[in-house]
Amino acid sequence: MKRYLVYGLGRSGLAVAKACVKRGWPVRIVDEALESRLSKPELLEEARAMGATVQLAFDPATDNLDCAVLVVNPAIPRKHPFLLRAVAAGIEVIGEIEFAYNIAQVPIIAITGTNGKSTTTVMTYLALKAIGESPILCGNVFGTGYPETTLTEAADQAESASILVAEVSSFQLEWIRDFHPAVAGITNISPDHLDRYDSFEEYAATKLGVFMNLSDQDFAVLPAGDPVIAIPSHPKTYIFGEAPADAVIGPDSIVVLGQEISTKEWKVYGGHNYRNAAMALLLAVSILEKVGRSQGEVPPAAIEALANFRGLQHRMQWLGERHAVEVINNSMCTNPVAVIRSAESVGKPAHLLVGGVNKQLDFAPLAEFLATSPHRVYLFGTDAGSIRETLGADLPVFNTMAEAFIAATQTAVSGEVIMLAPGCASTDQFRDFRDRGNVFTALAEEWLKG
Picture 1 (cartoon, rainbow, N blue to C red):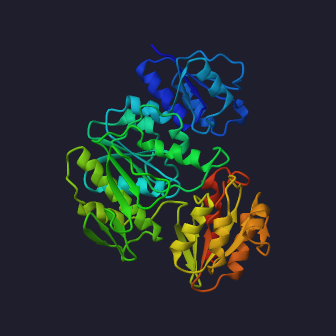
Picture 2 (picture 1 turned 45 degrees about the vertical axis):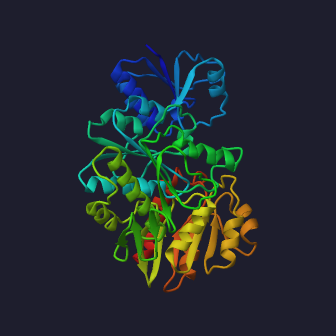
């Protein structure tokens, strides 16, 4: 019987430990943090309550490995010395999604990409749910307001008719070997997480690993014209984007597999979400064809579900308007390309709150975009000064997001938008992107009430 070591006490690590305990597999959870420094102490209580062995203040340089399989938390970089030590010792190192795949008995839809993957994942889940399927929303998706769980928990809970609809990140894809979704999709790939990867090419290759094990009986869904996403040779493919794609996105409609769908009355905010919807419908069609319940048709109930979708928390979340000035929370916008896409989607001048911790990304594309656009930027946070050097020396810099928001409210006029679109990580002033979005929402609600 294999002994498992879970490296990192997080949501996914706890899920792996639960699955091991349930099956009678020996498992130990280790974490380098002291008990007093755990970010989520409730996970420790839960781990101990179910009988798992937990070792805190773990020393990765000297403490005993004592396992056959090491399941690594996705937050831990691939080149961490402890992981290299484990590999050198001949220990099998896998990620949580590899573990989940190994225990799953039902098909998986895996969705990755730089921007839009959470929204596309939820849209796919809603489309399948609306037509009477039994999807489970899972994976890296977090803070959406919908019932979400880890991929391991989903695999453990699944019934025979279930479909696992999983967002997967590049971090999760670093340690896959046999991971084999029935359908895999990529929203797009642009520079991100260059504080973790040596190059954009390494980051992109990690994302493309989602297609690695697909066969000619599986499906891939990907964007048209993306220079770094090559169409995989084995699986059946659906393409979305510009004609002659399988799903063509227009200003007021999307045409999916020859069926025109008007988007004029849709509730979702932002034209980029029509791309997400087109991809979600292709993913839904793909899995229905894969499991033999449909053949290349878009179910009307799926379309209706997406027409009524209002977006996710912290992702182009419309908060309200005052004096015809709209306010949008897009805290999940964590790279410069996402700032550009967010600004493009509103179709009107935007006051953009940008800043936080730069993930070693180049803000030059945003500078080029702003040079020919009506948008204004208000910088805040740790790396505001260095970002200002790239975007332009005349931009205002504020210590906090609250100060930047007040300045934007004093400048914005009727017909414009104030948007939190940080383009950066949140960890300088906030616990995570949700905390940042919640603080912004509170600021906005106070101002919206006058």
